[in-house]
Image (tube, rainbow, N blue to C red; front, side):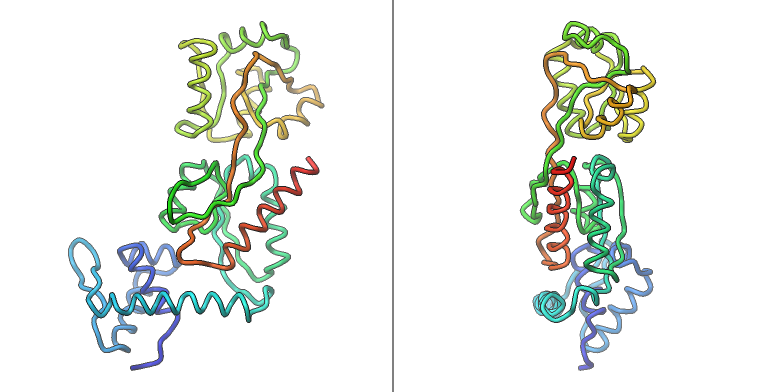
Length: 299
């Protein structure tokens, strides 16, 4: 038996977890032939076939099932060595971070800065998207760390609770701010809100039906910046994070109004897969909570 290669072990585990070479290659940021070569060399080194190639995908052989148990132990041991032995400034890895736009517009830059200060050789890939897509990416192992409207209710996912965001109603500057005027605005102006099929969109649709009626026009948008711009232009009203609208109110570009009710605060978590355990991902999640708490204290 040739000496085991950790890169080959990682490729083997990723093929096992994702069910195919193509998905494993995407996850590892390698070409499909590169992953195939690693699996082939691992099989040659061990002198056994690890997979049965079938039309439906790759199925582990009996020897492959045995190797998977030991490969997971190798993986855990490698993570432990990196945590205990390797200095943070020596960790040369890629961390794939997914964040909702609300967080991206608030404390995400502070988090990336703190992450770079602690792990200067860490390569950080950032994907800003709606929470439903971030959740799917996390479960598909396309994202290591997801900052999203949570928690993610899956047994395989660990959730770290983050500070929430209070929502308030905004209209263009100069419109009447009385409760009666607020109810009128909700009947006469389109309500601009978070993207379709998100939790805020769903909750707002229900509340508008109960509080105002069935004929309210709702314009969903995947861009928080666009929501604010549309409201400022007088094209609609919106319930958006107060912390992001504060400066626009101070500049007399927007104003708050009170129809007598508002959606509940946005609750976020930083979520990650607990298996396989990664000390780096766990440390990044803890750092994200610290950065978020500090940012909210100041803002």
